[in-house]
Image 1 (cartoon, rainbow, N blue to C red):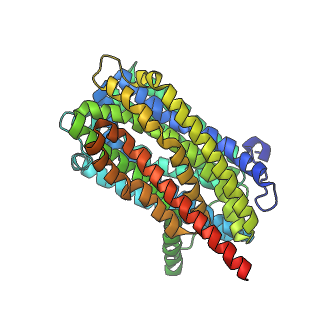
Image 2 (tube, rainbow, N blue to C red):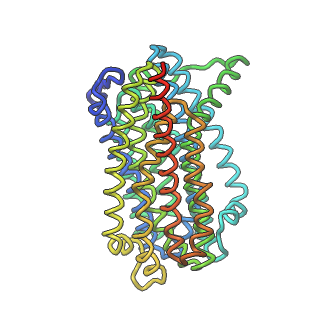
Image 3 (cartoon, rainbow, N blue to C red):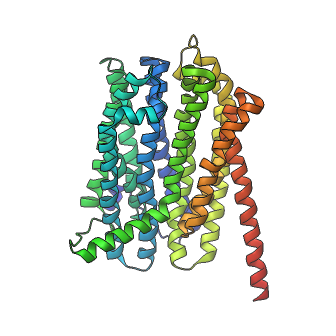
Length: 461
C-alpha cells in the first residue's frame, strides 16, 4: 500500500511552519476524536430511549472503569510517543521501535489483570462504584459484556498516538471513524431490533473496540513507515530494560492517566452526591453530563495531542522558539474550541436532554436545569488540558501531574462537597466548572511568574 493511500503526510516536525504542521495533525485528530465521543453520546441516547433512565444511570456507574482503561492506554500512548519523538529527533529509529513494542506489552499485561479482577469480583466492584440494588442488574450486564473490549480499547488508545507520530494522522482518524460507525450501527441493532438492552450496548462497544484495535495492529505490522514492532530479547537484561522504560513511559504519561482517573473520580463523586440529594433520577440526569464530557475532553485532547509531537520533537532538538510557538498555537485553538463547545451545550440544552430522556421522566427537568451550568466548564477545561499536554511533552512530569490532580481531585472533590451546601442543587452542576476555573487561574499565574523569572535571568546573563 502506498503512503498516499494511508494518508501519510511526511510531516516535518523540525522545520515545517508550526501552524501548518499543527493543522495537518489537528483536523484528522479532531474528526477522529469527535466520532469517538459521538460513539459515547449515541450509546447513551440509544440506552435512554431503548431502555430507560435506570439504564443510563447504570451505564454511568460502570463508566469509571472504561475511563481507567482509556487512561492506561493514553498514559502509555503519550509516554511512548514523547520518548519515541525524542529518539526520532536523534535519528535513533531502533530505540523508538523498542519503546513502541514495550508500551504495548506492558500495558496489555496491566489491562489483563484489571479485566480478570473485575470478572471475578464484579458485584463487589459495582458496589464500590456506588451502584444501588435497583441498578445492579443493569450494571452487571453492562460490566460483564464491556470487559472483552477493554483489551482492544487499550491497543487503540496507544496506537492513535504512535500512528500520528509515524506520519499517518489520517489513518488514525479512519480507525476511530470506522470503530465509531460500527458501534453506532450495532448499538441500534442490539438495543432495538434484538432488544438486548444495556447488554447489547456493552457488546456493541466491545466489538467496535476490537475492530479498532485490530486496525491498529495491522498498521504496525503491514502499513508502517518508521515505527513498527521490534522483536525483544528474553534475557534478564532485556526484561529489566523493559521494566525501566515502562516506568518512564508511565511517569511521563501519568498526567494523562490521572486526567482519565479524575474523570472517574468526577463520575464516582458526582454519582454519590447526586444519589444522596436527588436519588436515582439525579444520577440519570447527571449521567447526561457525563455522556457529554467525553466530547469536551476529546476536542480538548485533540488540541493537546496535535501539539505533543511538535513540542516533543523540538524539545529533543533543543529548539525553544518552536516549542514556545507550538504552545501558543495550542492555547489559542483550545480557547476557540472550548468557547464553541460551551456555547453549543448552553443553547441546545433542551434538544440534547430530549435525545437521552423522555419529557415525562423525573430526571428530565433536573437535566434541563443543570446542563447549562455544567457547560461553563468547557473553556477552562480546554486551557488546562493544553497546558498539561505541554508540560508532558517537555518531560515536566511533576508539573503536569500536579495540575491534573489539582483540577481532577484536589479541587473537584471539595467543590462537590461544599458548593451544594452553599447554593443547593445548582452547586452539584457548578462543581466541575469551579474546579476547572480555579485550576486555570493557578496554572496561568505560575506560567506568567516563571516567564518573568526566565526573562530576568536572561537579562542578567
